[in-house]
Image 1: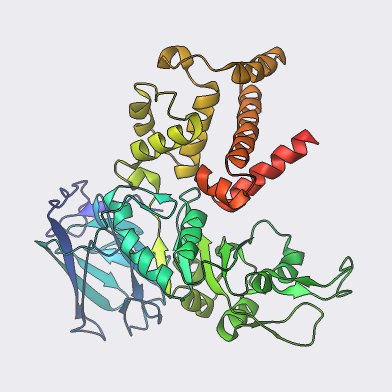
Image 2: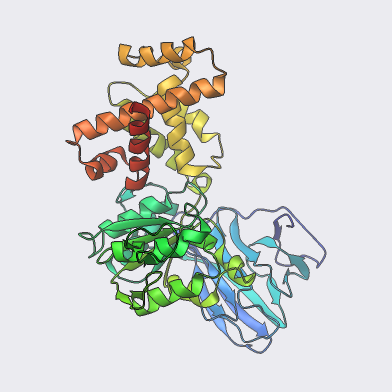
Length: 453
């Protein structure tokens, strides 16, 4: 992939610069108008601004925001989205490419005044600043989704509206951004909150068992089917089904999933009848589904049916100020109020790009609480209940990575036990008090039970 560049409005066709536009004032939003100046759709105009929480999709497809009839334009040709560096255009591996100022690009940053060339179509971008009309929530969280950055507060109103509707939703974002936590928050904010929130991870089931896991099976349907089993669709009846990593779903199952969503009915493996299901679908993926559709790996009609509502969770490195907010929250949650946050820890955390996002930050805080730089931080000496675990691991003479992993596992076991005790054994309340998704809490709990048996 080519390196992204920033094009000046009047630069020669061969010029490449690294000029980054200054950020817009906090009391204004950046607005763009995309005018089609050449091609079959000449005269078409589309306006959008930085208040938009999702990408603008350009192409021939029905799901595109800027929909073109140019046969040289791919169904999903390119996306436009706002970043800290300006408006970014990303080519979605289109057949005929995307050009900015006469130069073919895979990704470029725009300031306004550029002419984009897609197939036989030319689009001129006009930029302006306008008084802020952006809908930014004053809240610092949405359910258990925590964040005070403008990037997150811009999403909260959209999430609230989507939660109150019953449309299918696709949540996109890198690994560890909190897609499952957001999905559960949407379920809790919906009219289905009294129903079940069922999680299905497309990567956690063997391909040969995917259909059975989704739709269920009858007794004797295949070797090992010793009893009738309901699939996750029937389990989630009346509630929400969260399908994680939808982009990994086998192509053979995609039309069957589409039918289940469109008709509200499923057929168990080995059955002759159809079962009615009333399920709200929330799907998530770390993949770029626009690229997957363009490459033919994901069905266009399934994407169109799922992405009625679409939310893009920004990576932690783009959430201004949220590293400190989340670090303080996780520290209070794990270490309690009696143990102060070590001085200088926040600044060290903010200097790191966090490729693993919020999950990596949470794990880093947990490790620091368990085996952190205690002399350097000035934190009080751990209680005897902690020193026995440290002494035990030290006596094992393990390499540092394994020793650290042992201590983190010990901490997780004790934290789960403490959370359950504080909530009278109620797993859902314990997960909520821990600030993590119910499924993740159950995984930690299962690990603790295996270790003690």
